[in-house]
Length: 254
View: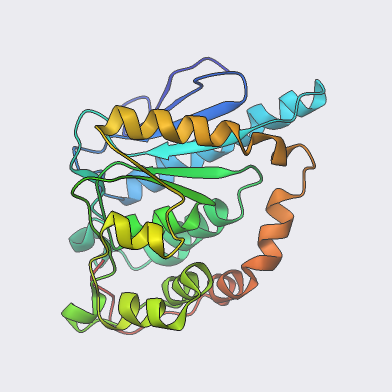
């Protein structure tokens, strides 16, 4: 595979690169705020995950199994990691959630190598969800908020969202604050709660560099080839919610 690899090649919305032999990197650049559109997920993000896994499995056959994946927002700015879904178009698309969004959640949540999210700015709604689907989070210590704001719009949480909040935040007080109060968490709160593993001073490039270094400390965990299988058991409630294909009558504002 030749890197860097822009996807889709006709109109790149993300780029897959390989900082070294064992680390892969996905950088979102659907504008400055990296909205999660159907095109981004279907034509870029899901194919990018396939590329990374295929390349890793090829390395395994050669006796090399160390691997990790870092995901970062547009590094040409320091304001956003991801501003969530392209809401207006998402609610007009009756198949988006079932055919694209939910399968993407499941794929990322159970990815077979360690995933590290480099949160280089605000992560709202589905952007925060993206970060929680990763195994580890490295975040800027600067001005950045993470939140689910559905309660402020009178919209219920889709089942996979609710399940991910419960299994990733764990503490009932934290879950309540996140889901029922729509609290905007700042970096220090997330670090203190154990949601973020490391805070980094500086710009997006510094957050990314720290995430790559963190990834190196976890890459050996991929060698056993059971990382994804273990996560399937840990997050069974989320997977069941996705596979059941349950829908809410009123789409959430994401």
